Image (cartoon, rainbow, N blue to C red; front, top):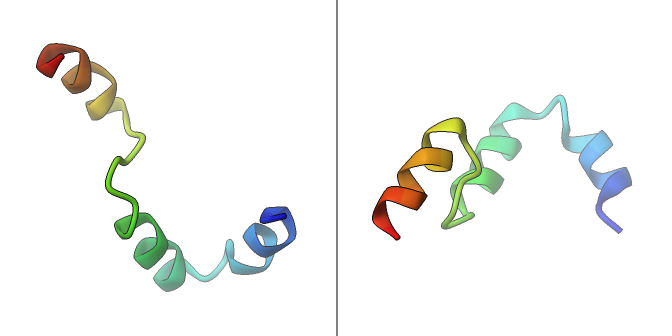
Length: 39
């Protein structure tokens, strides 16, 4: 379960950025239209 962890770390943007940076594929509006183009 990550729900409680997400609530605890939500205000911790330093951790949040590091966590998001560790994810190869970032879910963003840009990727939303970039991915279909690359496909």
